[in-house]
Length: 372
Ligand SMILES: Nc1ncnc2c1ncn2[C@@H]1O[C@H](COP(=O)(O)OP(=O)(O)O)[C@@H](O)[C@H]1O
Ligand SMILES: [Mg+2]
Image 1 (tube, protein in one colour):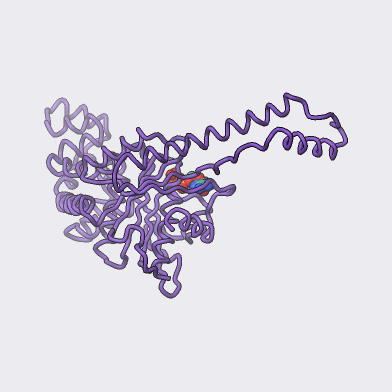
Image 2: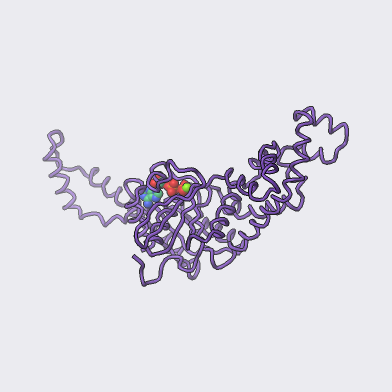
């Protein structure tokens, strides 16, 4: 049902879910996708590592990785999902851009390609961008929610286009650096070094591969470069929004600030923060006489302990209350601090569920709590 009030990330075409590992990025990406789809937008969630039950809920469990899968198709609600498959993304770029089908096969089968595709640091991140760019170009969705890879910091992800650019600017050195130290020396082609190197890495076949690779891969690299550039533009434009997901327990204002400044260096702004798995605020403990009465009635019901509640017992309960309330208070202060850290920063919270929210109804409910 489309809402008339303002919708989440209304003017965004792409929303990146960033944050440390294990905080609930994938879960929140799915919840956001469902929520935005219910508001009438055609949404696709690009996810990296859904837990098994979440993958099941999204219908991704037995899908072909990399393919868009319909998740919800109801009148006015359109949600798709896909699991990113880095290798497939690279492969499709090679196939689409090599001069001939034969060349594409040669590239894909070359050891250079295989080594590079695997070892290019940030390869998964780059694949994510390339796949998103394909989705943007295809134009079938109003909103793409990208669950970023579980890297320790945002930079790894945002650096991917730059890394590819470096690859283009100095392909020999970079590619070879990706295949180990020996490679860099081959380009120098000192003959003794060369023969030694050939022995070490397995002979002339490799050199042959290298020649083909450098010759044929140039066009493909250009395409990688173009996509990286497009993606950088998209990232920096108003069309991209950033949702920082973090947990209340590991959360520190510092961490969020560090994230924000890293992203700012790329012209990106954190639009909103989700503090996930917030524990419910513990109420004041009951007054002493009431607590004693409760303990007595509990003791009366129990055949073993019929004593009046000891001072210790009451005290322990008060201590437990105090501890839990202090945690709640700390969370509240974190929320306040992050909320006031920057104007226009939206801060949302999601309470801790007893069971992982990994069915569509649970994710809908989570989405309503966070974004509703
Ligand atoms: N609000 C919540 N309450 C309870 N469990 C949650 C909540 N959010 C996420 N989880 C669970 O926490 C685990 C990690 O979540 P996930 O989305 O995979 O994190 P990430 O993608 O950041 O690594 C999953 O088992 C998920 O179901
Ligand atoms: Mg995840």
